[in-house]
Length: 437
Ligand SMILES: *Cc1c(COP(=O)(O)O)cnc(C)c1O
Image (tube, rainbow, N blue to C red; front, side):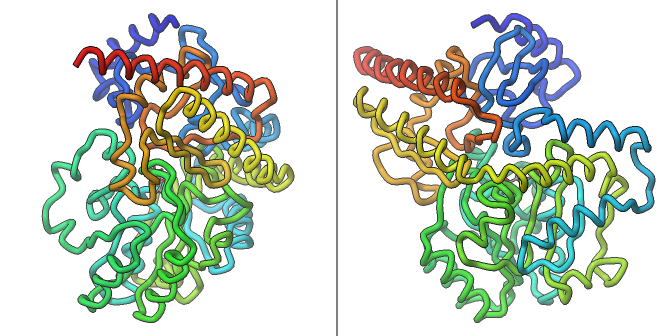
């Protein structure tokens, strides 16, 4: 696989961009080698600057659920572009997208649009603190909620990849109100709630996707809802990744829980920067201009982004690809398991709807600790062989793969062939490294 032009751009980019990227995972640090630069994408495929074509299972880390440049979405964007880019005053598109979102989240009367998932979550936390009059929050190890100070503790995603405990530049005061619990471990939450009466909210990814895909056990998520309600602690469900991924609406409905505050992002912008947080009236009416919780944004509710979000959700509703996603994810899981077995490789595959992810480990992955037992060297070999064979994967063991509704039969064939070759390569590289010891 030729990556000459990507290599060249990477060198050039390093001069004025930090690590030649604008988000760390794009630098391919945990898999080594040259990070690819993209030229264009269409449907299920993405093409790099050297002309290598891949089936795209990154999908910009989630937003491109219909595949790239869906005709109807593109049309809606072009139409919006002609009217202007941003006005600093409201447009009808914001009302329309707000209704589409509130209609499918039972606990959401009102929503506020922002520009990213990070912004959605940090605003939701501020609101949760204001509503309860309390200061602390509980988050789960391995869950990622964006890069705001208070949430950069035991976070997954890029931090899991880089093995950083948190981040420099975050003062102790900023995280002293953040308590950590273990995913799928109710006792670890109870411990905090029983001991501390200054807890405003518990925040969780309903299905974790930033330590690899980790599902909650039904008892865990249901009991979490019960104990937070009993204690008068808000449950903030961060659906930035899961929203509109596994059903038209939220994972919380599938899991049978209802959030006090829901955070959204990724899919609802269809590829443009949109985040959102929403809740019942009683909570949302505390936000300015109705209430005293200040939160604002020059480009929030941007008309082009709203048009893209509306068109994406409309098409998604029409296509209703969720059974299709489940089927394809199960097929890919089977491909992975079969080839792992054929090559004597220990593998766990977790999936939820269109999120899927293999862990190179012999133990079930149910939390951050078990996820971290994965053999990242094997993932590295697997990753580069998948790339060589035409499948673009997130360049980290701890990022979910995503499926788009644009996936075709021949893409599945490409994925299957790539998996078979890559697993065999993982097996042979393991033998080699054992021999070298
Ligand atoms: C991606 C993500 C975020 C952060 O969203 P950005 O748009 O990258 O700021 C927050 N929470 C979850 C669960 C995410 O997956």
